[in-house]
Length: 258
Image 1: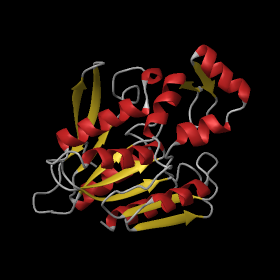
Image 2 (image 1 turned 90 degrees about the vertical axis):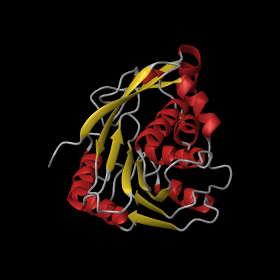
Image 3 (image 1 turned 120 degrees about the vertical axis):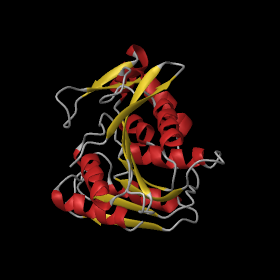
Image 4 (image 1 turned 135 degrees about the vertical axis):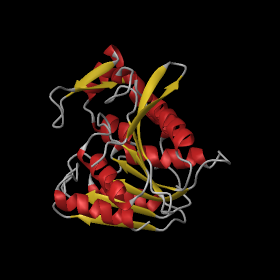
């Protein structure tokens, strides 16, 4: 597998450098490119992202990956991150690098950001259209529904008083800092209280054994789509990551539909 080109994009207010890996497709391949959005505290070198890039290379399709600020190869401090900031970065990368129709794929938090990105892109007349979406265990509104509302009072008080709580994680060596800024900013981007319109087909992959994003959360999300064609695939023995070989096969098949 050839390495995709590493480049960067600098954003201001606050200044941070976003690392981007861009793979060019074959000039005679008119299929949509792939645009990947990672999950919370994940990066573009994760199993699913790398598998998508390898598949894109084999198919001769473009593939764009990047790291949010405070993640992976990008600059910035993770504790400064919010949904709004990472959405701004997602939009900036898309507008700068996506020149043709894209299949946008988001994992966990990335699934929420995909839907927010689609809403922002409708305001951009010259933006490349989204041809389809694949959402993997989409953690829409997770800061409120899956974090704040589930936290006991002691943790809420710690976040309010200290500005941060260190949440133990099964996916990393150390805990994740959950900041007051992350929670408060998340409330400005909630989507499950109304209808959602993407303007494109959507395929959701959800593990029934997911301890972080319950499968019923995905069912609730499906009920919010107004007019879009939505397919929900429930994977009976699937966990949150959905990174097993059989899960990767399902992901690539879903992307290949577009």
